[in-house]
Length: 218
Image 1 (cartoon, rainbow, N blue to C red):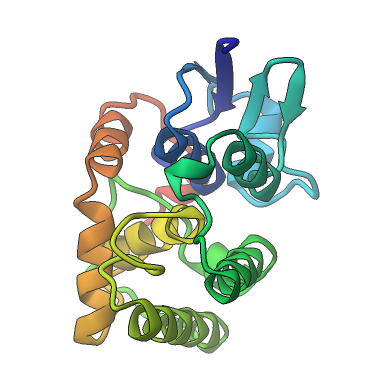
Image 2: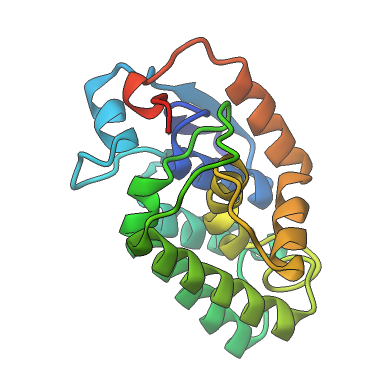
């Protein structure tokens, strides 16, 4: 199979890059990692939520160029159905697509109020009302998925597309010390303990670059 490449931006700040990277790792596709510096104008616009289009991550493989995270997930699922990016059960698969799509297109208040920053920790962070509504909806999704699948991941024993989509949220909740019920807190711990997640976090902490707008004192 042709060698693939995945273009991403900052591992510390880019939630979309993390999603695409996890999806590709989960699939088992061998790929070359291409990192765009955070000071690149398009990467900076994506990280700061200033761009109407998100062009990272971008997967290139066998003549295909895919720059939408859900499209990357669907492409990889077709290539590697045995990887389990989507559940085998019809109802669970529809639910997985639904909650992944909700993450893909929603929660703008939470995104802007709690930007991803793996190096930071704000134990006394105050969540404003608009972001709180988004957080409440996310934990509702998690509770419902975990109750139906019996965990430890959203749709069962192994991580799938939905877990890749919500992994950056787990990191945000830790950065900003968001209080969670035991089931959701355990889910966050499960996601953060994944070897792929540990690899990403370690690389993020070693990044020398900083985006000043996301390193303010809260």
